[in-house]
Every structure is written in C-alpha cells, then in structure tokens.
Image (tube, rainbow, N blue to C red; front, side, top):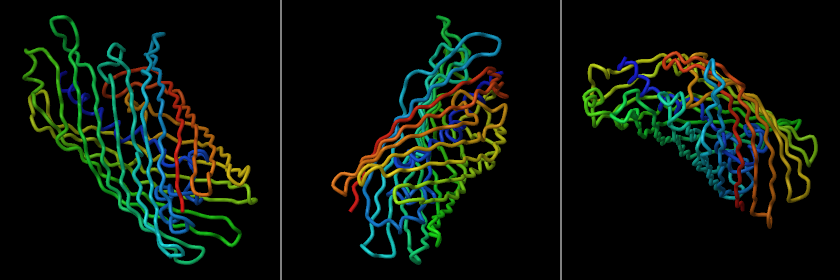
Length: 407
C-alpha cells in the first residue's frame, strides 16, 4: 500500500508538466484570430508561429504581452451530489519577441521568450481528492533564437533553437494522520531543462494565398534533483526519507502545422491552421529516486498517450487605417486516454472562441487585446492509479494584452 501511495505522489507533477497546460498563448493578434498564425504574417510573434515567415516582415519589432489565465474546474465524485471547485487563482503566461534585420536585407534575426506550458490549480486541502492533489503551480519558459532567410520574393525559410526552463510546485495530502487526526502532506518541487528546435517555410502563391508549414521538435525535459518534502508523524519518517530527490525525463511532444492565409479584399484576412501534436511519444513515465526504501522504489508507469489534432480558424477586418477587429475559434482533441485523466489537468476534447482588437498609434506602436473562452467537454473518469472517480467540468477564461513597437 505504501509503495502504491508513493508512486502516485511522484507521478503527478511531471505528468501535469507534460499534458494539459499546453496553453498556446504566444501572440495577441494571433489569439484574436483563433490562434492562427502559421500561414499569415502579422508581427514578431511569427518567431513562434512560423520562423520561416520572419524574413518577410517589412519592419523590425520589439513587443511583449501577457495573457492572465483563469482556470475553472468542477469535480463531482461518482455517486454523490458534491461539487468540488478550484480556487480563484490566476496563471500569467507571457510572450516577448524581438526581430531585427537591415532594411531591404534577405535575412532577419529573431528572439522569442514565451510560456507554451503553464498553469495554476488549487483544489484546497479538504476536498475528496486531496490525496491526489491539493495545489499545483506550473511554469515552463522557452527561449528561442531564430534566423530567417528570404530566398525569393515569394519564398522564405527559417529555424530556431529552443532552450526550455520549467518548474513545478505541487502539494497533496498523505493518508497518514498525526495525533490531532490531520493527514500528512507531500510537497514536490523541482525545475528542469530541455533542448529542441523548430523550422518553418512560408510561401506566397500567384493567386495571393499564403501557405506556411512548420515543425517544432520534441523537447526532452529533464528534472534533476527535484525535492520531495514530507510532513508525517515521526514514527513513519523512515518510510519517507528526508532529504530526498528524484530525476525524471519527460518528452514534450513535436508539433507539425500547416496554415493558410486568404485575402479576399484589402480589409479582410482569413486564416486556417491545422496542427498535429505527437503526444504518442509519451508512453511511460519513469522515476529514479536518490534515496530508496522498501516502500519507495524506482518506478515505471504506463501513460499511453495518443496524437492530438487541432483545427483553428480566424479573421481580421481592418475597420480603419489604424483599427483592426478580429475573431476566431477552433477545436482540439485530447491526448489523454481514458483512465489517465487527473485533477492536475482534467483534459478533454475542447472547443474555443476568441475576439481581438488592435490599434496602431503614430504608425509605430500597436496595442492589441484579446479574449478567449475555452470549454472542455464534460468527462467522467476513474483514474487507473489513484482510483479517483467522478465527472470533471472545466472552462477557461483568458484575457490578454500586448504592446509592439515596430520601425
């Protein structure tokens, strides 16, 4: 029983790191247009959306933005009318881009710093699933230098190197009581790093349609020396050795994308993106503990994730020379198979809608705002390892704002 408990304690944080918080909040113009950007050229966020398009930018860019994320999830335990809800906390994904190149040159250099994974979840310490999760604070920051080259007036290519720094802080109750009857607690903290790359191609057709194709590689993220802090009765401390640490490597998936831009008039831009996320690389989660006991052995747990697909569409209408109105939406399938859904990231197939507005000041300064609503389909599950059984209902609300200076 202790071995099963400790296995569950250590599975949670890195599982959450790699699955349900692929936030995709890397550009406010693109968010407003339904997260499209692979086949269109808007601003410095092309460093992320399509590095191949960066050389086609007519100006240099310095821009940054933030997208506060409000994650609202309810859990109804099977056979009850109880409703457990996450606390009102706000995660803060951000993006920063710089793009520079000599005027009329065939090349541009770009740098992106952004948070493709992140979240903040707090179920409290009294709900039915407290032995699975109390709270989770998750952050992943990607640093991406990029070079892009215009080969002809209608074709450009580019690529970038990715360095990932991630951190996680998770707490959960332990089903062992002290003299006052209070359960124990485990806090799992760690940070990790990984490396990857991305590449893209951007093409202008004779009909005016633009096409983008990109690949973002798998990023193996290693958490080494993560801390496991246990608060337990003195009589049980030998089963929960302190200090203790763990090492694990998680494959964050590769993504292949194709996007199209359509321009029916000077005022309209229409966009369509399709993404294939190769979550099927995530088959097993393994842990190597520095200090083992009879109850705490190195573990290997099946995950059996599957590939996920998203379809995104959006539009921009240029209402005036300086004012742009945007809207979009899409559908994304879940990578998490039945039996592996957890309160860290109660993932499910989802639909979403977005709105956006952009205004240009003095021809050099843009302010862009966006709003996104995501609805995850209701999902009733019994987790294979924790046996937590019930129905998750989740909605996400994400306002965003950015400033961009271009010259």
